[in-house]
Length: 123
Image (cartoon, rainbow, N blue to C red; front, top):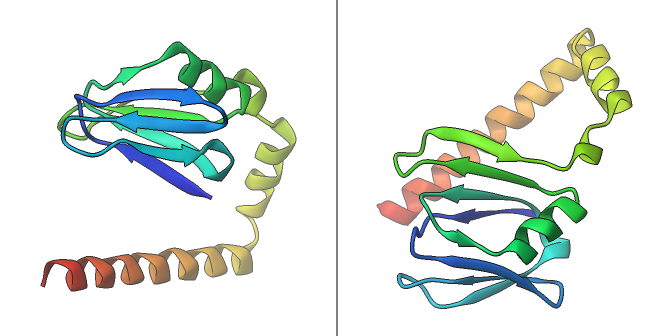
């Protein structure tokens, strides 16, 4: 599963036949299976179709909004996507020192890996 990032303000985002479609002036049109998307992060002011917004809510997928400078504005989530049981389990896990250490190691490892990819891409 992946997070889809839209950074082109001229982009038009729609939904058709189980596919999220992105059309933009700065890039070719692309389609992504909604089954492979965890959420969508929108930066700037692209055009979002009603069918896209409804499908995001139907599938309980998170839609995050950022301004053109990258500052967080807010998000659109389905009311059913909130699980009190899951939230309680998350709170309970904060008391588990071994779990916290394991998660911390995974986060740091991922950050190092991502930085290595960036360095390779731009060096």
